[in-house]
Length: 189
Image 1 (cartoon, rainbow, N blue to C red):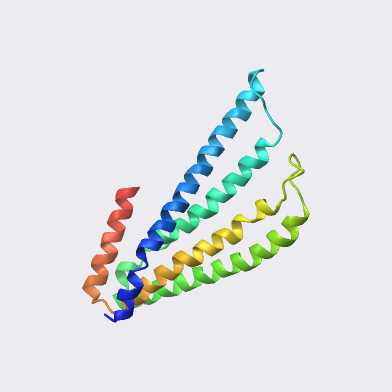
Image 2: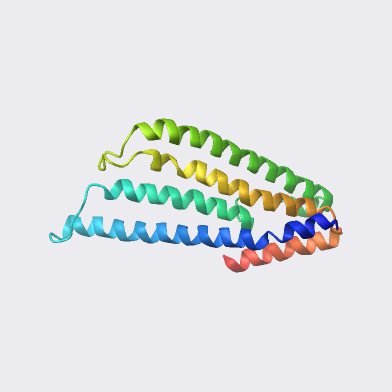
């Protein structure tokens, strides 16, 4: 295997750190969603608990951040939706090529999300405000899309390097690697 892959593997701790930070942020968004929603629902029925008008928009914004960032996290774990029904009928070389092709498509999607999402967030989003919070820009409502696009690109770069590295592995090593990944995914679910 070429030496460049050994150098690129040294970035794995950086990817691990970014993954952990994003996972922590997603957990914080989920906790905020649960707390704010609980407060809002309880406020409708219990008189001494406030039911502010801003809760719905904040919950929806937190949910947007959580959804798109967790989708970016799924890229790193290869947990996104994929069709594997015909994998056992295809050669290992063709599977490697199709994995690389799919990952190139996803990185293109990430670039589109980053560029177009930033355009919308910085133009349309910066001109409006939340209805219940007139001092907060709608930029924050559009910002999850370019943010997720950025992290999709980051995690896809690692995945593409691993896909290219797979071309240097023997077919049996590649099959064992894929079987191990599937076993881990099944164990996690």
